[in-house]
Figure 1 (cartoon, rainbow, N blue to C red):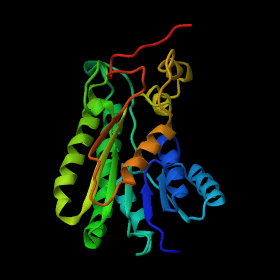
Figure 2: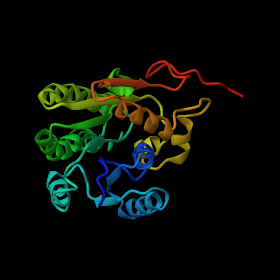
Figure 3: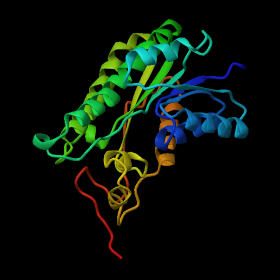
Figure 4: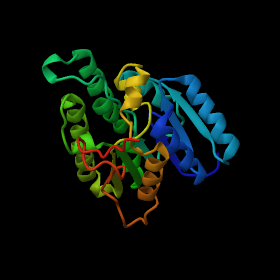
Length: 256
């Protein structure tokens, strides 16, 4: 393996994670792509290596599981563990209910993925960054980490936690020259709504009716902007919204 930088991208099988993997590979960065769907990871690896002169490793595991995450990490040799860029992208929303009628299983899924997932992988990557006194961590937050909306209390709580973790990481890693950035999108047309509504395609499509949402490529380009700043510049926080969205609740839908 040539001395390219190495990036680890969680939740790389679709959406923002997949687009970010492509844009990093385009910049000549070797990749470790992770997710639960092994077939999609293999497909993405082949796709990227065909287009770009980089090496891609795949790690298929459930990031909610701390032991599974550590086992996957130990599959990497020492060279691959020298991560330059960590993209904490894996995350989801499950259900859209008032708190008093919510499903505790949905709550657990969101807490374990959105909060514990970041902790499970970051605690493994950060010590090597600290040793080398270099690195950049990008946590994918959300407008839901800055505001709260009806029927989204638990999801918003998990993204508020991502906001707090990002700020805490930045402070804890300050002595070691490690950058920490939050990229917080509004509405992005990914599998997000399909997953939230448990495979209900019609309901998921209705989320974006009458507007042009952000695309995964829009967010990937924003991530690369933050990563590509000079060494003395750290973009702490970026909130990215579609033009037709002013906040988590205010959307200007156009009717034909």
